[in-house]
Amino acid sequence: MACCRSILFIGLFVLASAVPAAKLSSLDMVNQAMLMAAEAGRHDLVAYMLDRGAQIEVRDTRPQEHTALMLAAAHGHSKVLVLLLEHGAVVDARATDHSTALMQAASAGHVNVIKQLLKRGADIHARDDPDGNTALMLAASGGYEAAVRELLEGGADPNVANARGANTPIMLAAAAPGGMQSVIELIVGGADVNAQGNDGWTALMAAARRGDAKIAQLLLANKAHIDAHINDGRTALLVASEHGSLGMVNTLLTAGADMGTRAHNGESVLGRAVAGGYNLLVERLLAAGADIDGPGREEQTPLMIAARSGRVRSVALLLKHGADVNAVDAKNGNTALMLAANRGLIDIVELLLAADANTNIRAKDGWTALAAAEMIGDTEIADVIRRASTKSGAE
Image (cartoon, rainbow, N blue to C red; front, side, top):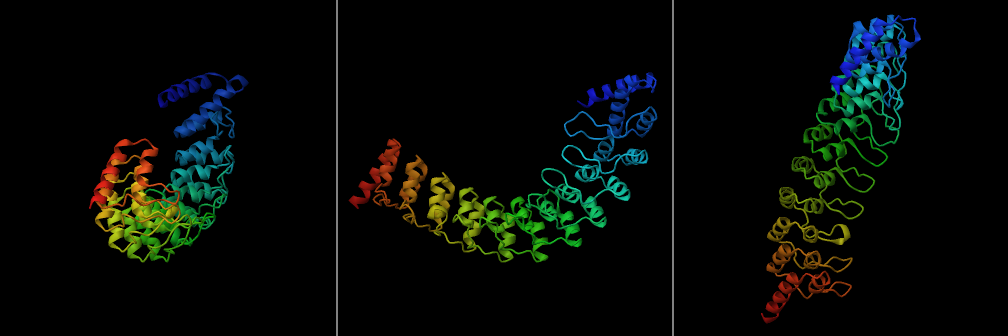
């Protein structure tokens, strides 16, 4: 694609140069040549095309309909940008998504371009559409700390939320790869580390989802609320657990996070780690005192969650640590054995039976583990359960 654009650019340049500027038929070629020269950072060619009558506010043919100024800004060509501004380019012209040249520069972290645009009065508070992001949000989400610093020094609001009310700059920086320095810049610039989106999301939760323990430590050192809740009841610890981040969980537990917290649907920290098959994390949580038989979603214990999820190693691990193999969920009366049998999970059924799972327990609907296996037509599991039941009765 780059090769084709280069060939097209050369062709347009040659044609535009060969036709007198006064002829209208040459105008489109002159305009396109200027746009391509601006994108390529060719100050000399942009100047030449402007002298040939190129229209300063002409738009390219892409869906966003960028101006030459936007293209120069997006690619960090500050010399071309200044030239265009000196020729009257509108500093806050909008693309179809309402982004401006300043936003284009911020999205790519082009500090020199940002400086030039702010110097010439670019609207630092402008928002794009439909997300309502500002230039600061775009720089923060890219982890461009120098751009973040420049925008903050230029008067950008570090605590403004986007149009949906879901994110502030510090939340975006905490979620960005390499966002540590941007988070520092934002804290120094007055960002509220405990700002919450309309869904309850915080910067600490964003760091937890990414598993960035260093950012979490920085936020906690600046008094981030460790047990703040999202609207669905999850905390940073629960978020870290469901994403299997051992380092993040260690950081949060060391800082005093409440391991007993549950989401509104009943999900527990241990239950989410089990559901994901994160066995090192399960070990860590158990060592920290997690309730091995504590009911979670659907009133199911971690062992039940592991059994229905097909997590053979997790089942073995929980049994090793003393999980109650015959625990019954309060909602339906199911046991881990029933759940595994109903899903045709022979390896887990055998593990549970070896741990003395009771084959005679009945759920609230009257079903046993044997009935659950027969219901799905799994004769192998049904035979295994019958043999175990016969052996248990004989003993």
